Length: 287
Image (cartoon, rainbow, N blue to C red; front, side, top):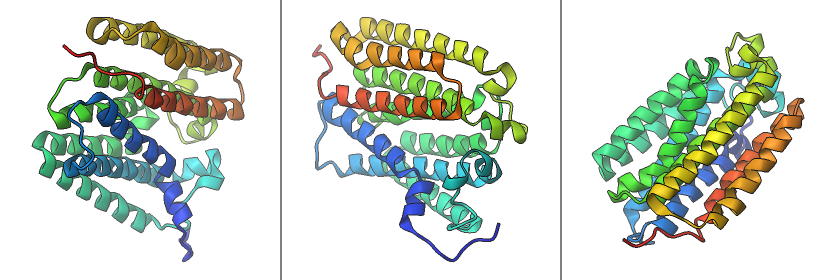
């Protein structure tokens, strides 16, 4: 494909998944604002953390689209940007520049954060190049990196706020479920290019059963972690977790078309946003 000379910021926002980046940024901000007692609005270092984390995530989306041009032309032809309005060369340069910026800022903040960014950038490249085509490994990688975005708040403040860890667990499982659902949405294009995702290996029925199992483990894990460390009232979990996850499970049971799975993926994102909003109401109990 030959690159076009036309360029628009809309395509750049689409390439870097602007709305997903906004969720990443708001999640870190909400964790610090509502869960960390020492948070200060004028803490320049925290804003550096937020921007660098968002830059790493943006670089990950870019390299993912770089490697997935042919697959996306089948699964999402209207959303392909790399090779059209943004050339492959500039996509790589933008990916490298964002990673360099984030890693440099990370080491300025703390060497542990810089190291986490180095590992994250490598895993996002490896995911896009290889892991996403393997069963479950790619899904787990993205879920782990999403959870780390939340847990980074604890690393930055050098604290172990238990509620932050609970939300990291929440982010891990919801991302894992969403990534598997996205594989069910994209299985036709993935199969064409030899990917070995769960829906391709197991079929949609068995993959759905696996997702149901993940949801059950998710609910039990969050309850156990809360009971051991924070002991939040059950009403929080009923409103922000059990009801929306139950709705997700019921809709997943009936889903069988690409549009069904696309709506389920959006529902997962809505549940993540509800999780962020719930931080307004909860507080880490005082010792």
